[in-house]
Image 1 (cartoon, rainbow, N blue to C red):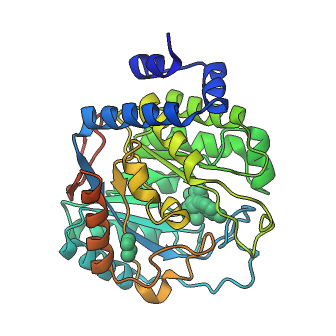
Image 2 (image 1 turned 120 degrees about the vertical axis):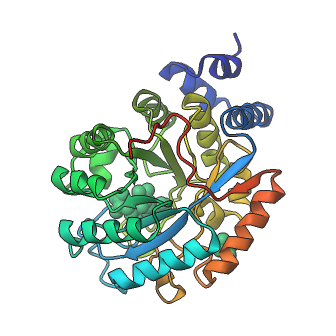
Length: 348
Ligand code: SAM
Ligand code: FES
């Protein structure tokens, strides 16, 4: 059987088959792959694309991931941190614009203690009970994840970054591959809808590594999958590296859709940064989420994970209408609801 047909019909492939497909991707095969991915997305979610309001609450970080512009050792990063009232204000603005998911993202900023975070999540859920809260704040102890879930947090994004132990250890000094993978499994057990994901175009990354990423996703079955191109940042040790391409990233987005058909998959900002139509192309290759920015414009350009990040000067209302236009241009419609994974049965 043709490998693409097998992928579509069985939602699975072996590592060897994935590598073979990735190494022999022609324009014609890509077209078929994207078409199958879009059809699969439509089967599970119709032509709806979900919008999440992203709030970048702090760019302080205790880690030193080699690729990341806000790594702790970047002395030239101008640091900022939003207070609880500033975050609540962002949520209120987002709520008024129609958002019903808030994604709170930051570096690993330990200023936000368990108590502060629990207070914050509790307050957001009191003020906006029909909205979902997604956290993307990195690695914490299990007691903190537990307490935040009990306080009402619904989802947690923690990309695995790369499923190759060797690459992971090279890129994350002082961090542990087993910790990262262990935390992802724990988050699921606690009850969160969990997001994993990886970067495409990392130095030393080969088709075999990408196949391992895809097979990890298949086995782990995350509710959300974030995939973006690696974009070098001039204040990091990887500044001279080449980085990932839109073309390669789209292929991995489409594969992920076919291997984990019910996943919520964002058309990432990193894709929009590399190409003006990167996010639209991702929506046509199986993605079904976009995350416009609600961070106050004053702070946005300080959250520079990579160079030339888009939309840093735009007001939330502008982003909202800009993205809606982009979604509509792909033949999809905006869904402003909570947008839970179809597999997910809420307990709360
Ligand atoms: N600290 C949290 C964590 O570790 O999950 C969340 C924030 S972190 C900055 C969010 C994501 O940005 C990372 O998971 C990584 O995949 C992505 N990222 C960081 N630097 C990047 C770069 N140079 N190019 C593309 N993506 C990058
Ligand atoms: Fe912000 Fe387009 S998404 S201006």
